[in-house]
Image (cartoon, rainbow, N blue to C red; front, side, top):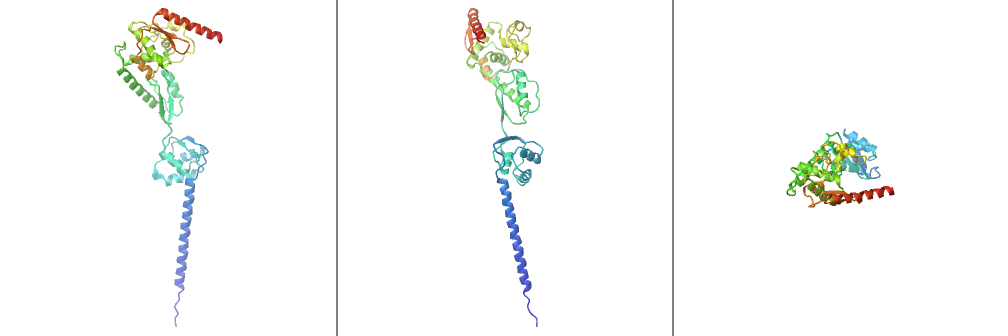
Length: 337
């Protein structure tokens, strides 16, 4: 007589239980791995304080190396894996970025993909010559490449923002476009009946005004002196033009001499009447405005007054008295020194 054997069913049950256990183990393992990965992805990083870093070109490995060397991440491999798994969020950019202290891998990747690069700034002061501006930009960290020589008077002195890696040539073009706009506006709004034939002549006069005084409240008055002299066909006799004739825009590390005053140069306004043939510096907006909207005065002379400003006079006798006072101030200073 045959017997029924239930063993295969039991075995099948045990196999199913084993498979289920294995699946659960795998899922638990995967969950643990996911938790572990998430912990690494979101855990605070090693950076002790906020830090700026220039991210190089060259791919993800180069970026990982730079971040690790800067102490922003702990493990380059984790960064490479995280960047690959999140690549749908966008490419990693090469620029200068600010990373917050203790930035996680998640935050680091967000900075590289979404943050605005650091805005650097360079200030071009009023009254610098083209040579001096060129030297300033040559030593400005973050700007790249060489630029063509700058035309005198073509740059508007201002503070310009740029990003690491921007070219010097591009920044110069921006500053020149700004000057073109500012000069056009000043010339458009000029006072009537000026003895200036063009915006170019206004620029030349503004450059002289810029070099003559650093006091904003004096610019329009200084402009009036030169306008009055132009109307009378008197030589401008501006010391800064003599300096420019001697140096071509470099600094003069000594006092002006008689030889300088006698130098045969079209820029020497002691020897030549009218405006020089070109600007002697790069004037700011206020000097452009002063040249095109000067004060109304009868002054024909001015000299330093010892306080950082100038004493103005309508006559040569009055000017000579002001000069005598200035020389006495210089003498007393020399005695005290």
